[in-house]
Image 1 (cartoon, helix red, strand yellow):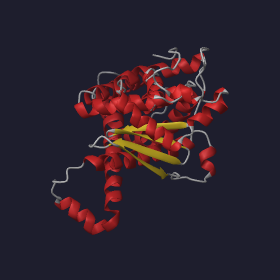
Image 2 (cartoon, rainbow, N blue to C red; image 1 turned 135 degrees about the vertical axis):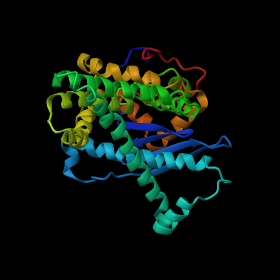
Image 3 (spheres, rainbow, N blue to C red; image 1 turned 180 degrees about the vertical axis):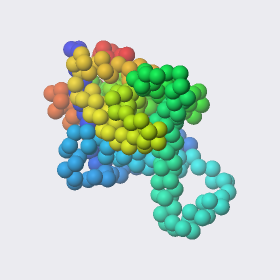
Image 4 (cartoon, one colour; image 1 turned 120 degrees about the vertical axis):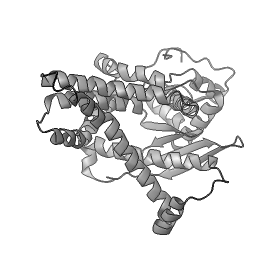
Length: 335
């Protein structure tokens, strides 16, 4: 166990939720939440995806579009589940709530979640795709170079994204969410480094990971800069429509990059992953042990990490290693 080990892809992924962590392994996912009374509640469900069984999922660049949609749907479900433990029971039902209940009946919650997701996507497209173009277009009378304008728009898009990440990190609830985000990453890093999944091992593992959604979103920004630089139209309306129409293409390309990053550790992959890992310093915070316990519960509900360690690293986990007071584990992957 003293020999430094390379990280090996495990196939699990997840996200932070309100006072908890969601972990997904193949078609099964678990949401573990620390309830107000201090207990950990774990829900395990199946999610097959919007394109389940389709051959499109085997096509590079196309599969990323469906993976992106699946992540949005699953993320919303997980957040709603975690939030249900912290809803204010004294909150009065609004007219909008009554209208949704009347129209959609027992599917009101799903309809509301779908509406929130659509509105959120529309806002994201408006802020990160359309707004940078609009601001840049104000300088068209002063800058004649279309290439230079494309570069300015791209830099502005990335700047808006980073400012957004920085601004929401100032919120108390978001900072706590980022700590659970760190716990999620640390669990995956611990497993993929070949360590038994214990609180002590997780706490000293890296809170940054190349397959993080933060890195994916940054790749989206960077890929959009390249595409919008080479793909141009003259009509201002078509320019806006083009930026919206290319979003699936951008998501597909970004997914392939993040997928490669999660399966390789060569020098080129490390270079292209570096900006995303840097940005994760803003979106992940150090968790405490109680948060790590929640993340571990989510992992163990859907992933047999002992079998994985045996298959990937060739050793069986001795139960004595699971005692956090006497583990001779290395610290070589701290970042």
